[in-house]
Image (cartoon, rainbow, N blue to C red; front, side, top):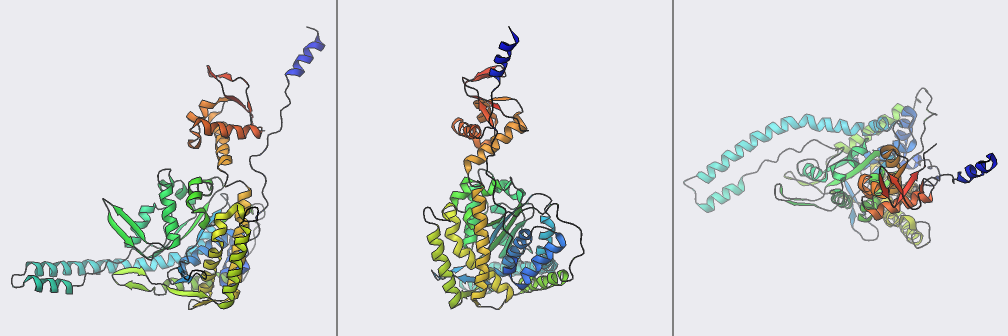
Length: 500
């Protein structure tokens, strides 16, 4: 064959392939966290942590706001302006940041006073436990004597038994639980403090644990949502008996890495169940490459000291409870001032307009529906943190809470645009990662994907949908008419475009 004709055939075989496209469009950078809106003590502590740890501002702020919610939630409920119902002060926060962003170091400063209070409670627990065992033994002996008494009639014995005081068991000295199952959390509330925090600087352990497994995810999401709402804990189990616990409080802060966070934030079940609308999520930009060594400011340590002192004051403050035998909380009420209530009404009405079809908040309608309550809760936490004896939320405090709530709204919109809420895109990403990391061959058939691939695409139709998305982004190339792979012909087959 002449060389010129041979070159024509070679050129004809060369297919101009389009450039692969990213599955997600590039997102706008995260806005700075409005630290000033946290107030003098919380804001001062946030600036101090950023100064000392050199972490992103939102990491410090998230940890501090979660700690403040835990410290205040046992003492008050905030009255909802529209319904008049008392609402918990509990906040659920999620911080998304890569490994190396100094999440643990920042969180350590924020939860330090909580750990101190736990140590104080633990120190008192052992002698209280010994006293309880002694009192229990005395009670049992007295009870047996009454029951076995020969000179008392049934009526007399009943009166004597009723007069006996059952000694209350001391509460478990635990204020935070890092990665419990829902059942474990309920059991802890039954024997422990009525106000706790689900806090973890390794939130992936919780997201990847049994509580978030396929069979338990819906139950966990519903249970956490009920605790956010302040609903009673109701459990009926053959082995455990029946549990009915009222007025327990839980705040949550999970610090998770990108990708791992999708198991929580991009899960369709939790989105439909409603847990997502209760989360205040922040994914700050990395500070890597800018964290040069420097001497901490002279104001940083005093700011942290003021924060520790205020936290310990709130954590040591006696909680109003039903009684010594029942640790059910009886939080007092805190209300919006007249001007703050007007500001809240304006915010609620604007949210309602903005979540209509085609409007700004339509993509995050679930979150937007709860945005006025998020602002309400944040305002109550800020007011009580600044003034533990407060009975009213000032308009100035609510304005600060509204600024913080606006930040979380911008983050929710930004993360939505990133595609974190798209189930189809997430499936396609998982398939692409599996093709590159696990499959490792140049070609793949449809049956390989739904038989061997990620759990989320274990159906032919779902796997075909994921591959169609990868095709549209030029990350795989369909082999028309199929192809033979590993000795077997596949009608639906693709060539995998290798990354540069």
